[in-house]
Image (cartoon, rainbow, N blue to C red; front, side, top):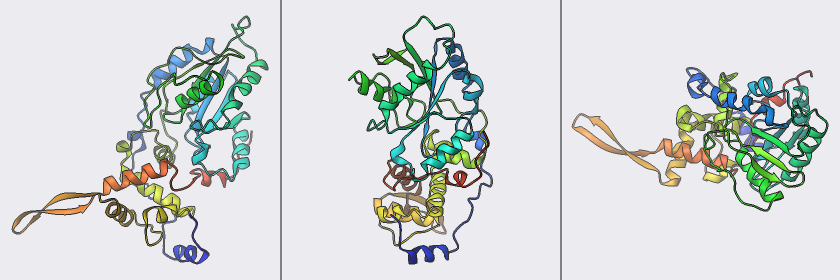
Length: 331
């Protein structure tokens, strides 16, 4: 929902935050670097692999990708699949592609694996990449073996299942979850296509041992790459509100029946809690003893706000809009 010009002017005069305060937030605590074992297993399987398919969230196309993938797996042909395109504002798609090309990523496909959008482009792209590269130790094989990699909860397993639906007319071969950490081991080969014979290796999500900035960490967390309680649902809700207001995306106002846009996360969550009937009893010490007071359940309201965003009910969002407005990297 985009408000009228008058409402936008009123909002701009409201003294909203121009930046998000990151004081006291320890990103290292949210993203512990304990995923080295998974990366080593991927490296040990490289000799069996013809191509790397990296899956990432289309809402953060320029941030949060694990740089160790390129460093340790970069000798193989590489296809970047930006999934969940239905949740992303792709009005600047060409600018996204230009930024990625500046980082050396020329093979990019946007997908929505829930509705199989653009999924049919993946196998032909892989076939072309394999056909134009040297297949070390695998010249005699007619099969294509592809390793699917990415940070947690970006849709790697969903892509594999979508490919099987498209090419084999078969159901799920690997579990899918709305939380990070569903895939915990490098699995055996999963066939996704017969012509050409194409097999995929699903892998666990692997985060970088060090996140480049707290804001990048918050973007990753908004997309569900870590469990919300590690960051704090109310902290994430505040960053989401700040992001939506900064981009003048006021769908939350209509969705929750608010009077208008607001930059105070406490006030917004209070209204959300009241609307949803989410309250909690809190003991308060008074001069006459303990008294039970009914208050809005702010954590429950924050969790609902985040779920609503992740389901796309607040409209498509580009969390990397700030990076798109910065100078493109030089190839």
